[in-house]
Length: 156
Length: 102
Image (cartoon, rainbow over the protein chains, first blue to last red):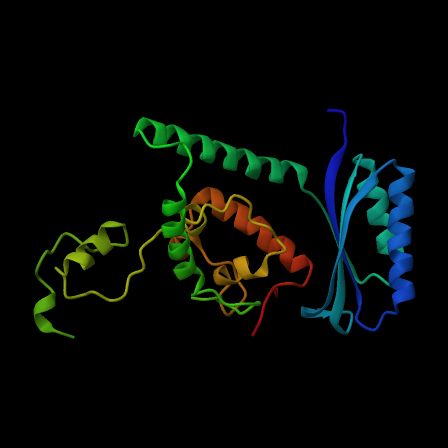
């Protein structure tokens, strides 16, 4: 329970925000993180995006994702600070370590099951190059139906 | 509508259970209006983590109106529907997906 948890913070600033202000917001986040002994694992700017609905008369926004590892108390403070900042029109903090852990374990379990299944059938534990190629073609077929971006109803 | 379609295989193939598309595949009932095979997309494609940032992944489960598609229509299994629901609600907060659209 020694609590270092991983969080994802996404915040949105108006599309007409200058780079200076953007840097300042990031600086604020970094300073809060530092105060709690947290580390910023990754900063990923998504750039301009259309908002799905208007937020305070803004139709477009600049999204920034920060992945932060730190104690739980960090989120409360970050939340408070971001709410005060006028430059940030929307933010969301989400704990991700658990969900990603679950996904990873599921993957490991699936892999193990595959190896067990293959050895039982007397095959080599890993799919051979040939099999993988065959599989690859199938996947391509699947991907042909996908459509980029948000559209209500998606590919259906 | 073909008149003779009504009586053959009376008991089977009605309802909405998985039995329905079995009957359709056999071509038994004439009432073969399009019925999607109900499989969970996430189970089939072995997607373990349904992320709120992946709009492309979520979009097929959000119909025109912006509501979350119910499981009985999309065929998603309960586990994944729960994860999907979380992801959609998070994406909505970030204005990646509309709450309502018209």
